[in-house]
Image 1 (cartoon, rainbow, N blue to C red):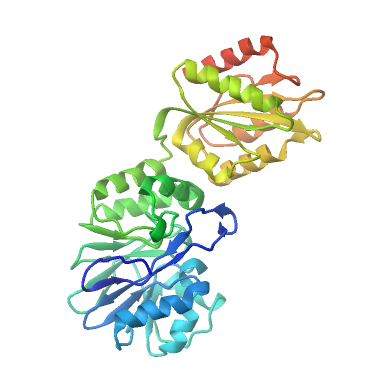
Image 2: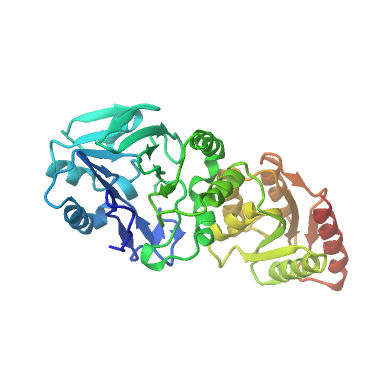
Length: 386
Ligand code: FEO
């Protein structure tokens, strides 16, 4: 267990997962991820969420060390996703008298995963649970990031247990600066639910929060306004980088890649802050993050089997699923005969909300020629003017 000191009464009992290959079976996490779990020690004891089942032995050991012979009175279940809820069944079996505290929605979902005979206590918005000097107030946070989610505010230590909110990739033993992976985490995991995050932020604004204990990543104790500010910006779908342009390409033999590099150079010469992504070879969650971070985006794709080259098709699906919006987009297609990528990318982007498209996509035919510089320059000018 990574050493995380919170306070005498609020104790960290989570685990680091550095063996994981893909988070949610889709996101590479080269620095792993932590599954955070906490214990509040007072007249009553409360365990705040569990961990992925693969780590149940290590977690139970952490827990027993902190409980030092006591038995947990409550298990507060804020989120039922298995990375946090996976060990509920074994804990419940070990402590059959322990009360499971969760939203009503979570309690209806619980039997889908576990057959627990423990007593349960459904809590609703604003309800409290006194542990002695510590009191938890429950705040419902549906769809941040599942429907049953709630967060918990402990008033004696002004601590918000924020479920997935404010989480980040990276095991605690391998932490990088928060923003590096918190943004990728947000846009790929929670980003679709901006409206729900906004609703939660409005509720949080009424609380005096001095500490945030998320279910992934470090406990946040300083400069909390910075983290809240990022969440506010991100959940309003506002670009973080006004001058930023993502140039993302899907190239078969390198010609579309060459066009992307030329377009990136032209945009850079004109003062844009360009990020270039090869959608075939780089993890697409990075490009998703960049797409939201930047106010503008250029997509370049080869035509393939009469349709889009798969890497671009997948990327557009990711953007659609994460509700990409409020940005300006330019498109470049490539096709040696019967090009279709421009038309198909246009249709996909037009279906997104509040996206401004450059008037006409640029059509490239095979290799990049000198004459293409003029067309790509005109496209760059239009993209930067919008
Ligand atoms: Fe970290 Fe939505 O689970």
